[in-house]
Image 1 (cartoon, rainbow, N blue to C red):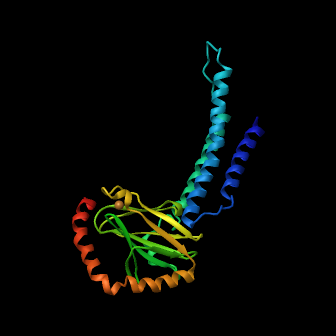
Image 2 (cartoon, rainbow, N blue to C red):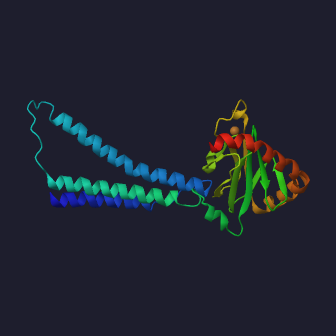
Image 3 (spheres, rainbow, N blue to C red):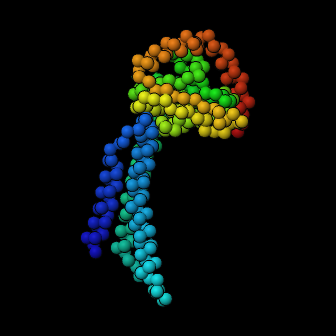
Length: 262
Ligand SMILES: [Cu+2]
């Protein structure tokens, strides 16, 4: 009996450990990879527990189906210690795995993270406005670009804001979602590991044109990105159009900001 209990706890611990060191599958971005991997780990931990609990329940109902005079269970200290220890191991695993992901700067980007950016990082200001997304590249002399292009394999900081209303910058395939709030800037960081085009949505209902508030992220090689920057600097220069944008930002955000901060 004693050895069985030890074997059960050991097997549970070994399973959770094996899940924790499971190699990471290929995903489109570091953020997506962290989220999906955690999701999988929790699923691997949850399935055996669900099967065990349901199995015991079904077995007990079947076994005692004709028991007309059931007697209360006497105290069973060993059993109580076993399930307490097993539950503690599961909770510790869930807490440890979740905290590791939640505290990662690719999931929760803190102001400290944005103050100490990586050297080769790309900075994009994402601006929501009924019903379009526009992109500024601070330091690259690009303002109000309708196109979002980023290089593969480099850290990217999206500084998300809005000029009129609450929107939400959402790229499901890259695991990105951040509310765009007037008068506020919130940064999310990612690194895209696969070139391609990814759909951008607005994930916060913002009016009649909400469902049309679409855009795309184009992820290209570093060389293509540098070329694209040069083209955009001619098409959407910050020094040519910066006045009108900053005016509209200041003007509109007053009305939107009141409702947000309340
Ligand atoms: Cu919107």
